[in-house]
Amino acid sequence: MKLKGQTAIITGAASGIGAECAVRLAKEGANIVLIDLNPCVKTIDCIQSENADAKVLECLGDIRDPEFVKAAVARASDSFGELHILVNNAGTCGRLGIDRMTLDIWDRDMDTNVKAAFLFIQSVVYPHMVDQQYGRIINISSISGMNGGVTSGDGVNGRSGPAYAASKGAVIALTKWVAKELGAAGITCNSVAPGATETGITSGVPYDVSPQAIKRMGTPADIAEAVLYFALPESGYTTGQVLKVDGGYSFG
Ligand SMILES: NC(=O)c1ccc[n+]([C@@H]2O[C@H](COP(=O)([O-])OP(=O)(O)OC[C@H]3O[C@@H](n4cnc5c(N)ncnc54)[C@H](O)[C@@H]3O)[C@@H](O)[C@H]2O)c1
Image 1: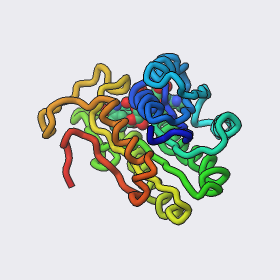
Image 2: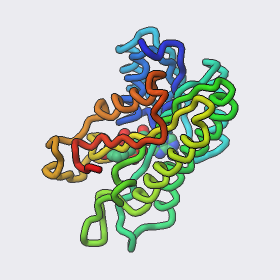
Image 3: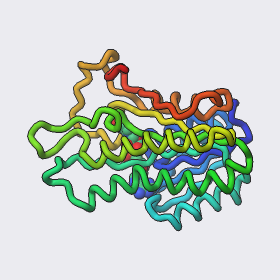
Image 4: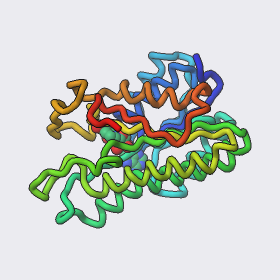
């Protein structure tokens, strides 16, 4: 149990990649703070079946709301004391092409994917991680944030829309900025960039895995293992990095 006594906050923990990260970190002994719009009942069940002693706090609300973020971090600190690990995972993905993109979808994706990550980093870093001179921040980006995503070719629906690609590119830049700023305080900030992964976000969307070296979609467990590496004390000399977990879709 490499994370015994540590506390991890994970956003978007009710399903998919966030749920798997919560289970994986709990298996290593971390106390887990689950954040989501939706109840995390299934995640809690899975955590308890992996580690019956795991301590779990569920905070339900909208991570785009700065007051919710502050209150959730305060509850986490009241419950567990020091906060060691932050996984900014919650995300939304509008798929409309640029001609049909609405401002509502643009704002939703930018606010969920980037603004909320900033809000959590701000609320966790200065009152907690800097005081402790220790922290691990992991931001879930996407290969769309590196290559611009996959458009449809017909201008209507892409596999990832323009706001999604732009927001994930911003997550990567934010990761590097935070890494530079906080390295001297013992805090690392890295990003995991998944490729096509089987979750609610990809359900019903066709993905061609033939260009990948590994010819299957990823699983949330594939992503959670990469997150675990960045969450460990042992990864303390790695910061500002983006680890693609995409089955060998892209190189370089
Ligand atoms: N699945 C993929 O192929 C893939 C690929 C690249 C990146 N990602 C990224 O991985 C992350 C997790 O996505 P997933 O695939 O597990 O999808 P998912 O839809 O299963 O999980 C996203 C979770 O975020 C929560 N959420 C969304 N908006 C929220 C808000 N405003 N406040 C609180 N919670 C909110 C949802 O309720 C949901 O539980 C996202 O950032 C996504 O962009 C996924």
